[in-house]
Amino acid sequence: MQFANSVSYVSFLLSLIVQPAVSEQKWNILWLSCEDIDPILSCYGAKGIKTPNIDRLANEGIKYTNAYATVAVSAASRSSIITGMYPASIGTMNHRTGPHAMFRQPENEVYKNITPIKDQLGRNIPEYSAVLPVGVKCFTEYLRIRGYYCTNRDKCDYQFNCPISAWDEIATPDATYSSVNKPQNKPFFSVINYMVSHESYIWINKNKPMLVNQDSIHIPRYYPDIPVVRNDVGRKYSNIVELDRQIGVCLDDLEQKGLLDKTIIFFFSDHGGPLLRQKRAVGNSGLRVPLIVRFPDKCQAGTVCNDIVSLMDLGPTVMSLAGIRPPLYLQGKAFLGKYKISEKKKYHFGTADRFDESRDMARSVLDGRYVYIKNFYPGLPLIYRNKYREQIEMTRELIQLDKEGKLKGDAAYIFMKTKPEEELYDLLNDPDEVHNLAGLVQYQNKLKEMRNALYKWQKKIKDKGFTPELDLIESMWPGLTQPCTSDVEMKINKRKEIVLTCKTSGASIVYQIGTQLGSELWNLYHKPLIVKNGGKIRARAVRIGYKASPIINLVLENGSDKLDKNIN
Image (cartoon, rainbow, N blue to C red; front, top):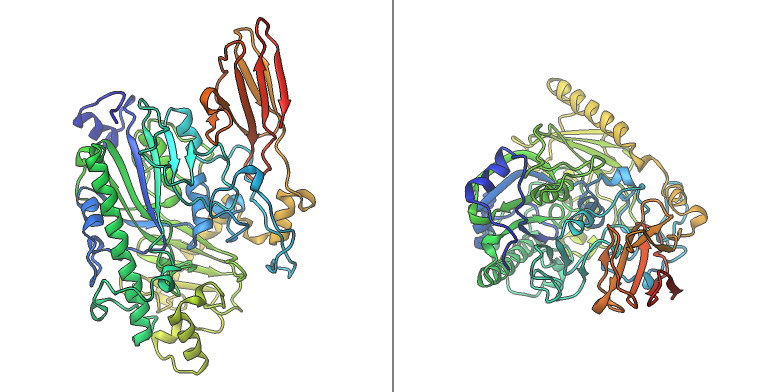
């Protein structure tokens, strides 16, 4: 692919550093996202593992050392990535609201009326698709409007059914930067998600050969150093080695196609590691992720950035690099590009609420060195029972050892039967977060500082974690019935253009014309359309969390300005 315009290396560098007023370059942008890894990579200094392909990205790009997810589980985290909003602000913080991991066509969007899951008041809740505040969109819509061809080969998992307005192509093996459907004159924004490092691959790959020396890997102090732990931690490392190999295949393909140095590449994980006290944890072990950005021509190669950034910032940053001013409502902020914010973040905020059938509520503040955690249910144990994660052998073994009273010292720390209301950890001296400093006199100023920061943040975003989940669902789905998007309305304006509208506030409209008619490819409507007499058009509308409207079929009658409409 060739870019529409060319700019010099110097002007591109300036666009990243000094933010010039105008830059018309439309760069290809590729996300290589993965599942469930903390920075266990050789480029981050991890011992006992070699990740040469990811190291290459770091050596040729910017490595971020203080990057964090908003929630340490995929669905809630990905809801913040795709919207640029805090899950606790938009009501997507309770993990697994419905079967949203993969894309479903609107006609296949069905939900169970009742599940075994209970809310804070002990009431059973249904499956649902979160309804976002009016105006909150998938950030990819802004890219599509500005001419980017947006593809996502694999996972959605946004806590709502992925709207058909979000992507040009989604959830097929061909939905990549190499899609045959992409017009040659369009740059791409493409997402490739790698599953091999996911929690489930600890047991899926358990019989595969180890790709690391188990004797050389680091065992966190909150685990006992016993064979079953070394085996599953070794499997985690081995899965990351395989991830690195798969990343290398993609980099080779980009190079062969002449795209590697015409594409901005982001590499990141959706949250921290897959093991106990990592995934679903609200501290550094669950939220800190690797993040690397590689620019065309290896601009800023080898840079290390210690600024605090959030995965919630990725969407606004992509928009900024594409020359699009991020909407003011976004809570995520651009950290690169034309609209990069000048003020550095002082804190990152994390949340933990319901995870599948397990319910808790905790909030955290991280500043790069200290971690503050507020537990809103201190009467619950730190390690609660969760069926999904107990498919990992070491998790089952540690639970049994705890029951038998055989865990000692730091290895017993995470099995506390009740939690303190507040936790404070110094990552410089306690990287495994096993020494709570909250009760020590010499740390009271830091404790108060971070406690106050959390209170102000919760008040600012109107933290929905305090709302019982069934009541939250009722506010989104009155009467526990999914609302429906109104039909698309069409008319012809004075310039003989077709204007599409929808009465549902916050809805997006998609349409098909020409060879797309009847396919699964939908254009995103953003300006009046020109259709010749006798031409056909199909359209429908969707607001996130609502049922999509029926498809409207129209034919512009020959020799008249009338539209012949029918619904199917």
